[in-house]
Amino acid sequence: MQTDTTPNAGIQRSLRQCLSNAAFLLYQQGHVLETITIPFRGLDSRALRQLREASQEWHACQRVLESSEAAVYNEQGRFVLTAMGRELLFDMFGQGAADCA
Image 1 (tube, rainbow, N blue to C red):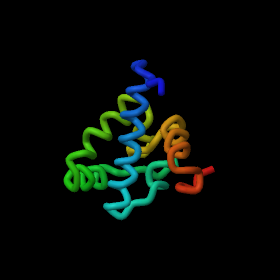
Image 2: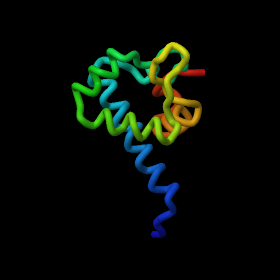
Image 3: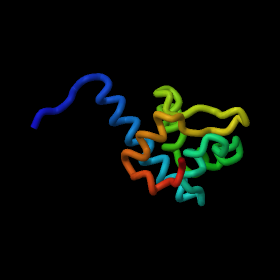
Image 4: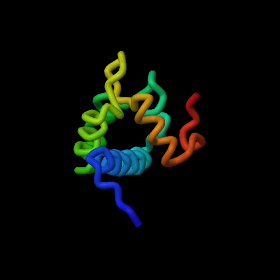
């Protein structure tokens, strides 16, 4: 079995792990994937603070999502996935995991 050791492969693995962790943490805190996959929704500062307080992993995942440009703050200042982040998430969990056109 050949292993891809390019820098992009490592970043993509890290990003996929963060998306998986983020989905789990969202569900634990009573959110659904649509919270971050629909561009006009997103997590407000209160929800982000609650996620950080509930899990030490959230802050690191949020940094990875932002630095890889898989997530940004929308016009309302809410944390959402970019088109690339949504595509990767849907690739991992399926389009039906978060009904978003």
